Length: 115
Length: 110
Image (cartoon, rainbow over all chains, first blue to last red; front, side, top):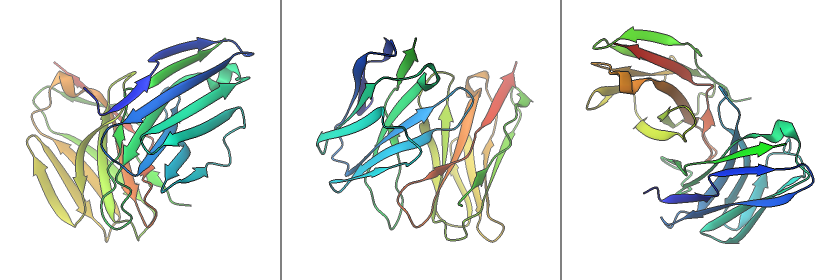
């Protein structure tokens, strides 16, 4: 079992829907991340939550909004998405150590299809 | 802008051969280097991490780091069809957030 749990694994939504992707980590990590990955492309960082501070990739449109209810959860709210937002959404967590390694542990991913 | 470069491939090797994957990076202050394996439609999983110059071996995998030349490589000995995947190089500099390369697709054919 992965220690980063993402739900749902698959999501199909229309452009007018509001949905959420959920991510929970059970490792006591201090940083959590959302990445977007299109086919045959590397993961693109969307948001980072670390030490109670949210960092946003400025290129991410406002139809994506993160929420961090506590240090173990990082949700991604989706509203008025476009078909080009269809992708694999990856959640990850890490110890968040600047000096030294910062190994990312990924969840299994949420495959999103926008119709 | 910090960049991590990888040949997208595909790299095709016969079963039992050595697969050599390469990665170069632009930030001389980079401290930590990672190789992730990603099967199609799945999430990345850590294969190797390396932090100092030289070689690090783990089973059939060897990571090689040369900070002076700013490259890191991954060797896979006795390649198996199950090694067929995309291999992502990730580099961490002063920020705690690693930068990913585009990945190299490896195909191991029987």
